[in-house]
Image 1: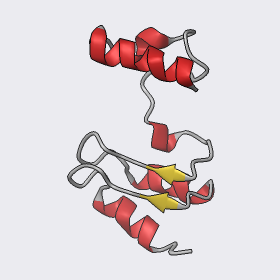
Image 2: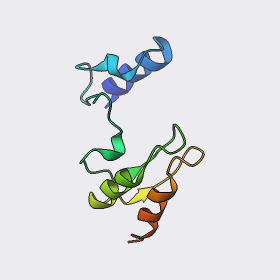
Image 3: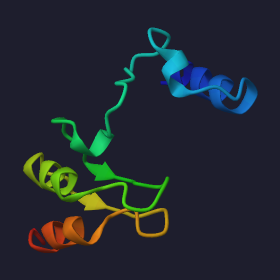
Image 4: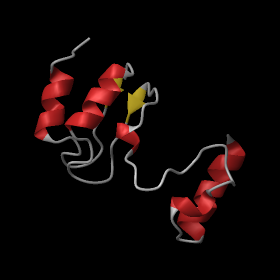
Length: 92
């Protein structure tokens, strides 16, 4: 929602702070030391855009298990080779 978006913009673009500083200020939640792709939650679309090898085999298996509809890479190889094999093995 707009309030959450404004809080995130303030955090990242103005304060230059970490998302963990938003704990309790938005409708979302920050989970320390976790990768979003390995959480047992449903995503319609996964958009890994930060680093190489961000999605590993376990993350890809979790995305498939939870019915991800699309995986769109926005970085240089954010999905490692093992994860790519899992995704390719489930084209539906």
